Image (tube, rainbow, N blue to C red; front, top):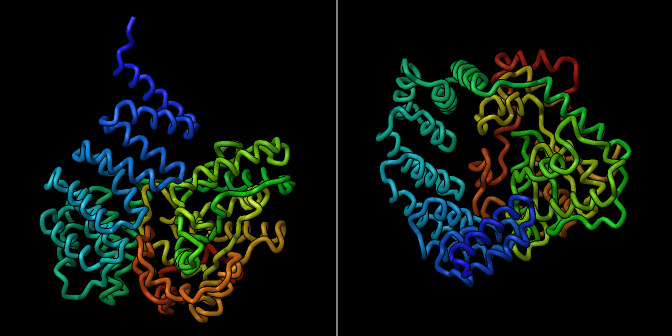
Length: 489
């Protein structure tokens, strides 16, 4: 009985994908490499090889595999999407733009591919080109509220900009969806601030945040239960014997949204030995996978030492898609990492920890003014809830300060903008690195920046955002009342 060659390939291919889903990426990659020799003209195999290479941190192999898949089937959206991600990670700017154009050509009338190109141009610092694309899209699709918010985020709107009138008309459209109300009111709030109509800003912010809360309601009780449960699980946890940490070594930059973590990360990542990982969000996810999610996390001091070694190994695998070849350090500014500082300290002896603080009133204002990805930071829609979260963050940092003395460095955003050179040198020292003058020129560094602060980090450090809350002190009263007698610093 003869085996059908194609059936044998499919069987091995399916086995490789199953292994990958189960976390055995190395064996999955080996099977796919063998299949690439047997069936070199099947694009699916090269596509999956690229995805496995990304998970293993082999960027060169990822590029070779996805480029081969493109040669074989360049009109496949999934292959184009992976190719865009691979070449973006490699900072191949011109190739990424070409691939985005190919994606647009598949369906020239679709909004999403063109909007994605405009967003990419923003992350690459090409704001003028991005603005041209978004304005062109707005003319073609005047009822797409998200396009207005995307543009308003990265330009300074002038009083005579016809976009303001278009946004007002759309905001009053009787059939505008809840999501549309959210996007257009965030955009109008930004327009009112840019045009110095400060008395109208919070009216739009209240409507935007109300719509956002309707879409993604907050769960304050669940959040507090998670915080207390995860902290309790780390009680009495001592450093793991013979722990080696991750490769590359991690530099955690932790702070609340809008507190200055992006600025701090970009300064550190301007060092020749560091690559910026951004909000990778893999640390807490890996901890939950191994030890139980949220308040169900098991007492880590009673876990087998091997399980804690597994955490470091799995975390090493999880960060590879964000790493850069031959760069020994990787920053991680995932916000929720502060919850597991005890676990990270115990299992990653080569990790560094930097906590960023900022005036809570400025944090609250900036959080309330900004739209976050669907379902994230649900507390952001209510000023009193923002106060509660900032207090919780400070209390947890105080806990780690007492539990892990001398293990992490704290820096104030206001000190950084007042004295950039001194504080930048302090940051580099906190990361365990020797000073390089390029760290003061972070705004000139090429590459993409995936953050709400992408426009700011393309500029030198500026002081205008410090104490911005004073302009809206009356509107921030619900936050200030909820803050109560707690010291501001």
